[in-house]
Image (cartoon, rainbow, N blue to C red):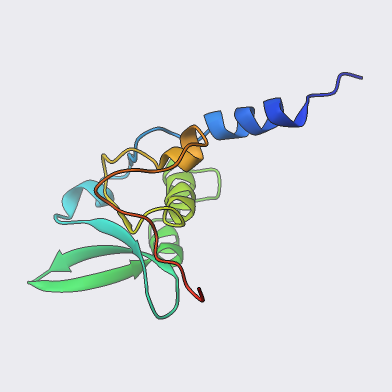
Amino acid sequence: MEHTPPQEAETETVNKIPSTIQFEHSFFHTLEHTSFRTLEDTHEPVMVTVLDRHEVSLKFSGIKSELNLTPDDPDAKMLDHIREGLKYVRELHIGDKMPTEMTTGGASVGSHGPAPRHGS
């Protein structure tokens, strides 16, 4: 039986993360000014968009449910990757690169800034 060294296994997992935030479902392409953030009070990841000049937060679970996204759906997986990415940066947008902590294991440097640390 062949054994994969831990370092190689970690690299394989990291490489399965898409490099850029992209969605297939038209829902994600019809809304303007969309971002992904973590709510400060509940620490829950949400999609934030503007509807009728008001900012609206949509929970990932609600999006998955309303769009009938199964766990294997590429858009459901992308939301899961964004959830993880928000541990490293404050905000993400469609078209952004995934945080480097997820794709290469390096530290994120950029305009999004580090994710806020809670309880420090």
